[in-house]
Length: 324
Image 1 (cartoon, helix red, strand yellow):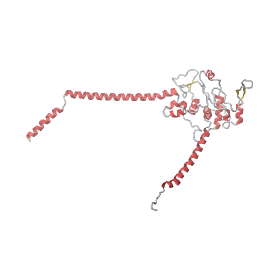
Image 2 (cartoon, helix red, strand yellow; image 1 turned 90 degrees about the horizontal axis):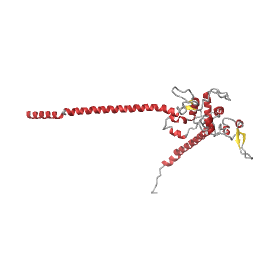
Image 3 (cartoon, rainbow, N blue to C red; image 1 turned 45 degrees about the horizontal axis):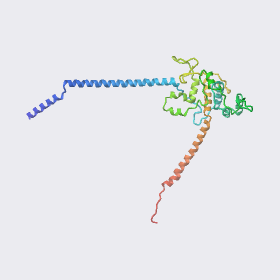
Image 4 (cartoon, rainbow, N blue to C red; image 1 turned 180 degrees about the vertical axis):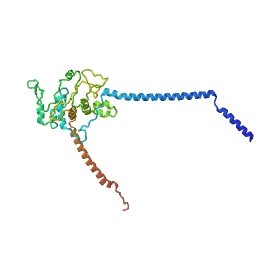
């Protein structure tokens, strides 16, 4: 037993001496551990720096996008946006008055005829009298010459300029756009809205954009310089627009006595432009409601036949008597 214990202690001592690494090897291992720790810290610092730079670039992207494409226009509660809502026809009439007295000197509405106003904002007699106030070039006559005549219901709204070159010359190179479809949002914008920044589509925000543009004139902020002949408007792409502020309190005297404030005139003219862009909206909503009602009746009838008629035939059991 004593000899066995001696051998055991001897082997244990040798194993302990062989398990301890040499001093050079241990220092090398410690050095590699320190290098690994340093590399990990450098990687963590690099990831942190990349994250901070990404956050800073994202925060500066929104102001840059607003400066390029214009400030995002707010969402206003238009009374005709509801599923069963209709246009405010009194507002359409006032908006036509604002367009005639303020906007028509520069902007055209080439897709609208006088007869479109009948039953919407004016009576037929009022519209005929309004159309007769303009002179329309017609012809040729029997002698082959053009002549002027009073306007009639089938005539379109008059053009403020003869052509685009004359319009640009009169407005310092800027071309006033046609307002017939200015509030109509393109279908492509509705699809791209899900995949783009809102500021990128601020100009295609329809009636909200037009109202914000008309009432959004202000003094340029500190550090922003506007070239002579332009005006600062944050809702316009680039912030500088050639059109001056046209809506001022009291600029129009309404026939019905409504106070002509800047916001009221903006709301009325946008209502008029919205109707001009979609004059069939009320009829379309009414037709859609009729179709929904008819399809609901058809659905109820189908459910009744499915439950009371077809279910009886579907669940019946046929027994074949092969004996008799």
